[in-house]
Amino acid sequence: KRFARQHLYLALLQNIFMKKHWLGLPVLFALIIICCSYKLKFSEPEIKWMNWKEVQEAQKKEHRKVLVDVYTSWCGWCKQMDRTTYKNPEIIKYISDNFYAVKFDAETQETISLNGKEYKYVAEGMRGYNELAAQILNGQMGYPTSVFMEADFKAIFPVPGFKEAKEFETILNYVSTD
Image (cartoon, rainbow, N blue to C red; front, side, top):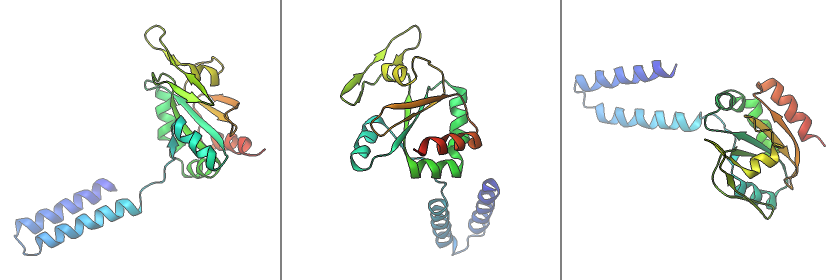
């Protein structure tokens, strides 16, 4: 649909400028405004992913459980979960209403401070890992893994592997109820 719409706009612009209509410039500006407002008005909702510092600040204002998406840059199933499960409108709404969401690269070399403790990068072989990833994954370094935490950052449990939206929604419902 988007390609057809863009092709139509392009054909219209070519027609206007090829015939040297005096309305060409105002029409061009009108089309730009329409396209921009359409994009802003109808942009898809997204999960507001936070980093560890942001989620700790947010917890000071309102306590919520935390969903941590533990991933790596090379993980194909992590990317699939980003493209499907985390793009599902029901999943987005449920996470936004009930959790703080943290996107966490398990191989980050950045030192992370959480609850007064610092977690550093550990070099191991060709790849390493962050100590926080090892802790919240209970040493089971598989990706993707969704880790659910209480508002005080105590792990509830990790859920390893790719999950379709329907299955993930069931897990979210279970975790969000006390």
